[in-house]
Image (cartoon, rainbow, N blue to C red; front, side, top):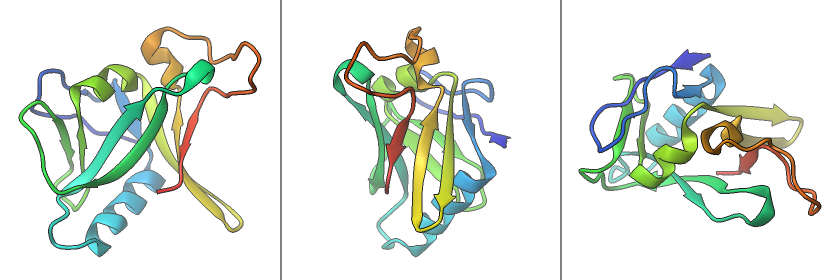
Length: 133
């Protein structure tokens, strides 16, 4: 696993705040390399997700904003995170998991960011989020 610090933005993600596994970093770098020339990075976002917590996702970013935290290893991996998402990502890990024909990005330990336990009161939600980007 690799910890990558972020720069810029109102809040920043340090090496202890967000872990991106080698598998995830490699896949994200490949996606950026294969994308249109206008794509500058991968953007991480969060949205309301009901009783199981927030939904975490990714999309291609054509723009970066002054309030974004930017994670860039200088080797083709570049990620931007808006200030709202930064608050929900502290302590999280982003992984890329392949299981047979299924492959997805997984956000682990996301409940640490908001002080939750990772348990759901009854709808069957889990402690991690998946993204099939």
